[in-house]
Length: 347
Image 1 (cartoon, helix red, strand yellow):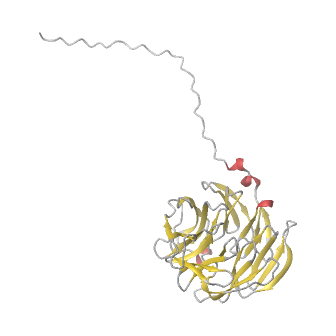
Image 2 (spheres, one colour):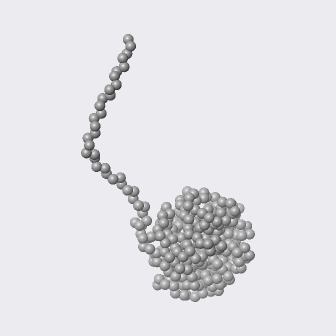
Image 3 (cartoon, one colour):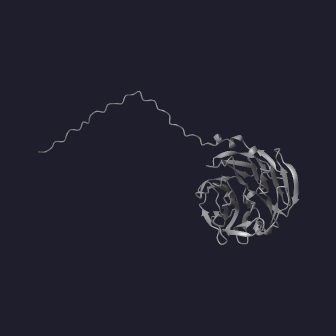
């Protein structure tokens, strides 16, 4: 994404190719606080302590950045240690909550790779096919990512807590069972719920665009949906941002020109909000104002419908009770005794 937020500080950062711009949003509107130049970049990552840009020259294939540098700044735009990461995914960067680690895809190894944020040291790496969209769980103990190849693709779950210098435990999760365009040859974007219990992955593939939500403890998909696509997107596949909101009861999904909402438990469609300029830049959630900030030259705030946040509006419809039938006025007819004669027994 090209937008990141620290709502505790009421700050929103936006990446505009060669500049990182900082805005104060305490008044409910974006007020410019300053900017710093960065090398060409397409992706932001952030935590409570800092915001960072994956910067450098795009490789010929277009999906990675060679000799990428993680340019890091405080939320006041003070420069911090900025390590070199190697050749990494162009659009992927997730930061652990404590700011000590980052995870992305290393294109030289083809693995999901966890690195030290201040030095770029490679700590753990594993994967298969072409992974993308790696994201940390809130407690940093898990990483989830999607993998693409010319076959089926896959969803990968990594155990950071059990990782060592030699091993980075990884499991391939079951694919979404229904209503999904497939996992093959696709870029991914992923996000965990605030409690780490669920993870959502969006992707775009030959079959179209889709989103799937997984139960992390049970390591199984709970629901999935097909998202709207356009002919233009098929020429430039991109996984749009997703985020949990309303105390993890709602999943917000970016779509071309709109933001869609689904019940996080069961995937019930709750509606959408038209958002001009919604695109690859992404969005961040402002729970206090029940809004989202959308990336642009300056971040723009869009209020979300109140029913999406209202717990009662998200309850499943109660099952209809069977209507009570009135007793029939007709008396049951008395059954006549059988006319069968007793069989005669031979002496």
